[in-house]
Image 1 (cartoon, helix red, strand yellow):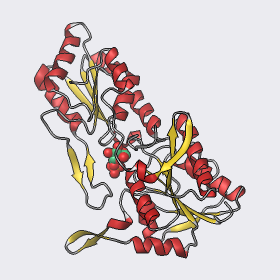
Image 2 (cartoon, rainbow, N blue to C red; image 1 turned 180 degrees about the horizontal axis):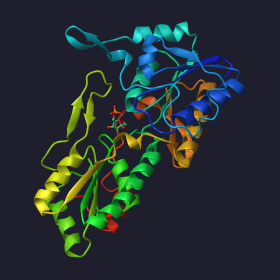
Image 3 (cartoon, protein in one colour; image 1 turned 135 degrees about the vertical axis):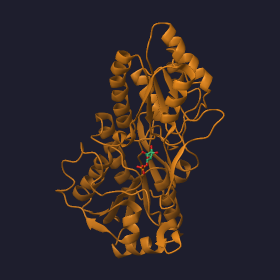
Image 4 (cartoon, rainbow, N blue to C red; image 1 turned 45 degrees about the vertical axis):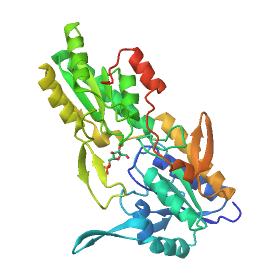
Length: 363
Ligand code: F6P
């Protein structure tokens, strides 16, 4: 890291458990081994455009490996290339990338590590093309980034959702009800699949396998008839019936991804009641899946990702994203990571395993 004396770090997009573990494993070696100054950028790219930055101290990066959230703050808004501004005509977007570049130069940054999801990696790619020294670290509970086998945060979200399904089992059984649990994941069904498999859900509905209402009704009724007088349906927020659309909760032009999903859980519960006569209840887990401490796995993965990012900086390997391939932490050109979203292949081993124990996917 001879040429890197001042390195910036930011967390962009929705938070997830493990962000602080990454910040720690970037900042500690940068300060102690390389004698670099680490500049923390507040609230993701929004703070980058607005010049909200501070020098991180050894004190504030200590004791945070187990702490959820991010000490830097984050934002789902503020893409520098499409920066949202309130005008008398409503929200308009402007290219404010020049402001971000000015701040990069004013703060004397030699490189910047951006920890984020798909939206963040697109921005990293744009700045890389403009000749700036950016490195990406993949995070998201959705696990939907291409070019890495897993993102940190995913297993923490799955742990929360699995615990919820375990708890719903006992009350579902006591009241002989159908319990619908809606989990996050955007357009990918990884959280629903992981938690549904770990929690033994009776039906898992994911965006990658559009479902038929009749198949879901038949499955819960069959269970009822055979003496299992309850069912758990784990539904991803992006799931949709084969003859229906994904449910959008809100569209907000200020967000890097303007669409916020949600509502399919309520619909599934309503339709199952109508289609089967069984009593249903719905639980929407929402942001519980993003809160709290990272699991041990995510702390370890996040720590490895952070130290790899510093290694990349020391090798001047910019325009790359840290990635997990098998058991190896490596890196890939960020361009590869943004080619597509990583969704659940219909023949994924998790789908196969769930089907093998009789789980219904509604197809
Ligand atoms: O991308 C992470 C995620 O939690 C998605 O699973 C979810 O659709 C979205 O963010 C929610 O966004 P917000 O926190 O802005 O409501």
